[in-house]
Image 1 (cartoon, rainbow, N blue to C red):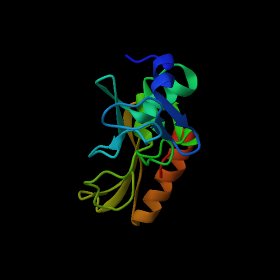
Image 2 (image 1 turned 180 degrees about the vertical axis):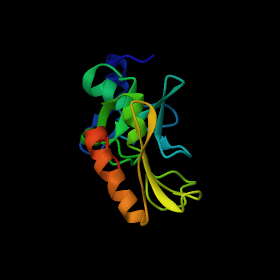
Image 3 (image 1 turned 60 degrees about the horizontal axis):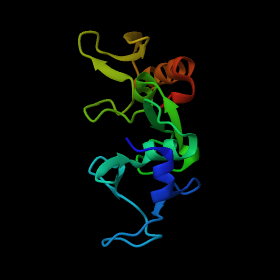
Image 4 (image 1 turned 135 degrees about the vertical axis):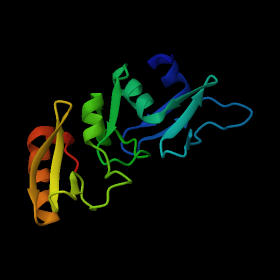
Length: 160
């Protein structure tokens, strides 16, 4: 695992932009060149001393001297590693700040059609358990219930 000292010797981090630039040259790169590249999942990855790291985790190490268990991108943009966009999170908090699932058919987070009742169901995870917030004739009413509960229970990690 890389140390903060080694990281600061090899790279410079600009907190406003979230970009890392090389401080040391090699045959394949010059000093001052932006480090890393975006992977297929949208995360910026940087290879230092033959080990590849996520740039958002390196930003924490650079700024604080340690890496939290989970790093959350406030705006959910995985390539935006500006310091103001990063925060330490638990696994659960990181999951709360997610985009809508790819298989969601309602178009609204926390809302699904319940065929048996012929109603829209609003549900949310609280303390690891799915909680039903109610059944509604209108999916927008179900979404309003989800938004209210998400803001109440998920706080700053609420992603609606």
